[in-house]
Length: 142
Image 1 (cartoon, rainbow, N blue to C red):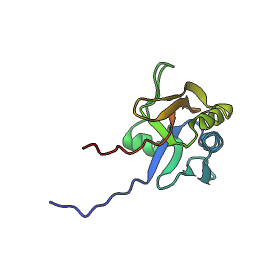
Image 2 (tube, one colour; image 1 turned 120 degrees about the vertical axis):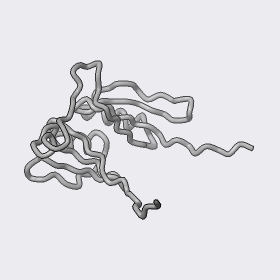
Image 3 (cartoon, helix red, strand yellow; image 1 turned 180 degrees about the vertical axis):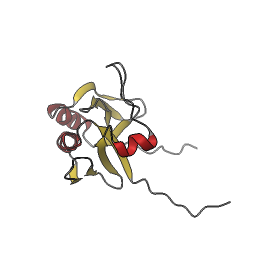
């Protein structure tokens, strides 16, 4: 049966220790504009084009009781099960800005065989953030 549903990807929600601190960090380290930070500091949003980057506390009565508690890594050798990826024209400058504003360096930018330049950092909560160039569209080969 065909469906008339046409979903639009609206939000990526990051569960963080301190919403206000994470919102300020992402704005400063990655260059986003803060769209909203509610007075309770339990919800924040950044403008990021068609999809909103949102932040909420790791533990909330509303979500823990309904959908289960968020699981966090137990050691530095583990990471949360999400990776946030941002595209930049100048990956090296973006990486430098992120590190200068509190991101933990993981891997300096390097060129990849598929034609992308990529660097990695961690945010305040250990979430891996990939900063990469746009990938060129594949060319048709006859």
